[in-house]
Amino acid sequence: MIELSALAVLGLAGYRATQLAVHDSILDPVRDRIYAWHARRPESGPRTFVITLISCVYCMGWWISGALLATWLLATGTWDSAPLLVHGVEWLAVAGLAVLLNRWDDTRKAVDA
Image (cartoon, rainbow, N blue to C red; front, side):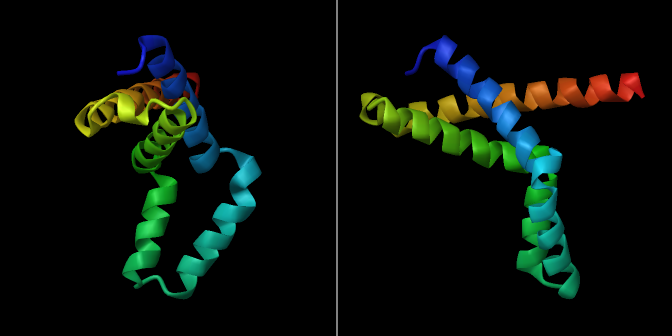
C-alpha cells in the first residue's frame, strides 16, 4: 500500500487533471471538436457516451485518477508490492479525494456567484 502523502499528491493531481479535462479553456478546441462530432449524429450511443464522459467531473475524474495511480505504481516499481484489491482501494481513495476537491471547488464557485 502506498503512503498517505503519495495518496494526497495523487488526489490533488487527479483534481487538477480533471479540472483541465472538463473545464479549462486550454482544451476548449478539443472539446468543441468532440461536441461538433456528436452533433453530426446525436442519436449515436458511443458519441453520447464520450460527451457524457468528457463533461462529467465524476466520470472523467474516476478514469483520470486510475490512470494517475497506475502510472505512479508502475513508475515507482510498486505495482507488484500489493494485491490488486489493495490497488483498487487506493484507486477509490485517490478518486475520492479528487472528487471531494471538485465538490468543494463547485460549491465555492456557487457561493462566489
